[in-house]
Each structure stands twice: as C-alpha cells, then as structure tokens.
Length: 237
Image (tube, rainbow, N blue to C red; front, side, top):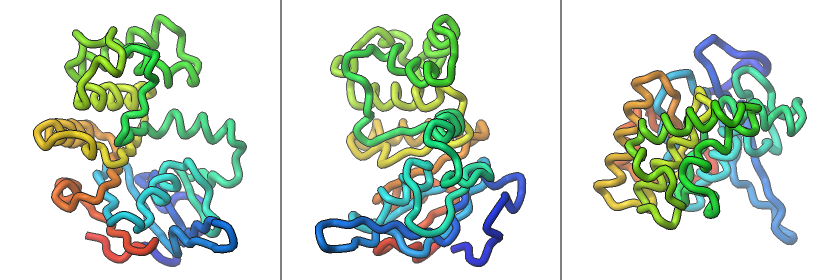
C-alpha cells in the first residue's frame, strides 16, 4: 500500500495510474455503503498487475476507479498525471479512450455489428477516418487469429472468439493500459489459458496490464498482486 505520497503530479515518468487515499461510498435507501476505503495504489507503465479479492471485496468499484470510469467520494485519482476530478466528462472520455483499453467478462460486443465493425468502433470516437479504422481493425483481427471470422456477428462466434474480438477492440486506439475485468470468467480452462497468454505477450510488448480477478491461480501469472478485502488493500506482493 502506498501512503503519504504527494497529492499532485507524477512521482516519476513510469507512473501511469495513481489512487491516493481514495474512498468510495454509495447510498442505498437509508444506508451508506462503503465500497472502498482509504486505498492507495500506484501502477507503473509496463507492469502486469492483478487485483484480487472475493465477491463483495470492492474489486468492481476499484476497477471503475482505476479505469477512470468513476470518481472517488474522497481522495484523488490520477491518470498519467491528470487529476480526473478536474477535467470535463468529454475530455475525460477522450483521455480514457486513448490511454485505456477495456476488456469485460461478458465481452460487451455490440450484437448488431460484426467483429470488424466492433473492433473499429472505438476509433470513431478518436476521429480516425473510416478507411484507416477498417484497415487497422482488419490487422488487429489478424493479430488475434480471427481473420476468417471478421464478418461474423457476436452470436455466431464462440466465447473464446468473442473475447479475442474484445481484445482486438481494446487495442484499437493503441492504449498504454489494458484493463481486464474477469477476462476468463466465462471461458473454459483451455480457452482461458490462451487468453491469458495473449495478455502476457501484450505485456512483453510493453502494454500495462491490469487484471481484475477472484482466481488466485490466474493472479499468480501477474508480476504483482494487489489483494482486497472489505474495500481495503490488505496485501501487496
């Protein structure tokens, strides 16, 4: 756990994400739920980090804040040195879309778009021309060995194929960080291993990988493990 760090600016050029003494609370009826409490964390460029914990430990809330999808109730979240609380939502969406690629357990593909169109979609929001985004989407699908499936709709693909499309989509804007939420949760063990090996290779190529998981065996493949319990970071190794 990182404590008593400076509140503004990056500590060093390697740092890409910092959570500084953050808390996140939600109101449910008359109750106040504290999902994350007094958590501090620095993730450096090129790391492969696993954030691990059982259901209810605060993993999803932590993921949303690490990925700059949500603001803290208390504390600061810095993405590449930028305090996300002090930028407009439209500016934050641009920063997030360029710097972070998201991969979800349920794939989150658009069911009416084929694989090629799904991969090309994030590039629209970064102002990439149609020809360039289609060309890049084709190459990304080739990279994940789906060149023969690029015109198939998600419901025509297996779970492993859909996750490969999701990985290609996450890489569309060449982000520095890949944030994967239970990326093998809906896959069989063989396919899950193939997906994990893809993450390891992406990390070797210089991508920062942040994987949210409840699976300790999966977490052991990461370089660093952050363990959560009851909304707090209880161990780091």
